[in-house]
Image 1 (cartoon, each protein chain N blue to C red):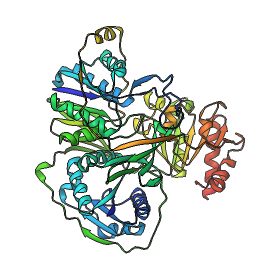
Image 2 (image 1 turned 180 degrees about the vertical axis):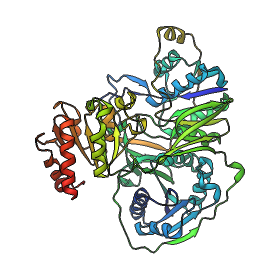
Image 3 (image 1 turned 90 degrees about the vertical axis):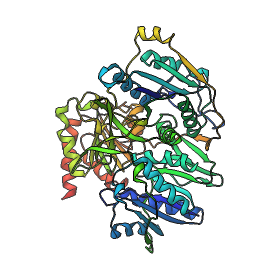
Image 4 (image 1 turned 45 degrees about the horizontal axis):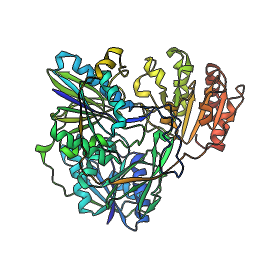
Length: 322
Length: 249
């Protein structure tokens, strides 16, 4: 038996997300008295692979066939399924990001393994295997029983603390068969967004709503994000109006994020917006309307004009950073 | 070319979710049911593609797994513009059950593009689309924010971490779509509502499928402590609190 964790890489590097997954896998493995095997797909150097051992992976398998540089859902599913069988995995852990959402359902059918998606805590019980998962966009949480012998869990980002351990991991090549004729995905074009902090990775997010009044008023918000090392986001009306890119829309139908700090400026806090940000560890609201629902979700609030408050905040952050 | 759009019905997204006595289910009293927002966007894009003659898309069918009480959702999709509908007469019990039913129906009816919303706003599972593709052993592309046609061939734009990729896969395939796929959901016009009454709805009986998961109970999120207000004249105090109390910067 084992817990298998799939650790995605980005241009050969792991991210905090990867270590969070391994830390989580390691805690699940303790609950069922077994060990963690981490699987990496694509080209990753040994030094980088070894890092996974520092968070509790005992065995690290690397599938680095050239074909695997492009995400082909069927091929990736085959690789993970084959390794899961060889490792006799009873729990498979994947991120609840775009890649995880693409692979978990295919693996579920392939292995006839039930999925608990978007889990944010350790399993509530291992017999029956019960997980705690977000439903109704964060307005209710379900205790979901997974009835199969193999279970797939997709972990919500930024929901589990990193736990470092002594590193004695072994690194091996994953022994998998890859059938090039079954590889179906052809990439025609790639548009990378360089140099920006990714919204879904950011520890701090500064977000603006319709209360910002005009796209011309975003300067101080972007400046505040800049000095805090934060990503910028916006509410749906703002992206619908074209004031900011759709990529920044956080909310039920946009990006779902869980940063440590979410600063909502001029956002009233409609249910649909909160659905995308309610898992943030700390929410700060700045709004001119003291009755705005965002204050019910916020830990700290300032009632006032964002255009006056943002410059003062920027000055105050600069003082701290000195 | 034929498109199938899978739709689920969910509580209106402004609903205040209440948990029923005994915690085993959601209190559905007074809930307005709507087409899942992502499915609605997906349907909108499918109709745009059908209405654009250059794509070669001839028809749009919607499919739904649910009892007869979910017919209004199907009629709404027909009123918005879908040509026909399939309803699989089962009670959805888990994603695996729903996907298995849809896949079974797809063995009887052939489609070139199967579109599914990336998640439903009730169970937030994000799995049905991928499961259908695996049941049928056909390609799937997830997190799709655009579908465009060039010389009759569809290309899909998908989100990857830190950017976008334009990809092609051979049809039939499942496109699992998200925000951006269509600008605003199409709304039913009076004429559409009238037409919808006479559009065909095929009803299939479900096949026997054992669900893999089961919701045992629901709980509300932990109550939130009251907001601490900071005087607008002294926003610097906020930073002290963020640093020393919340410890987030």
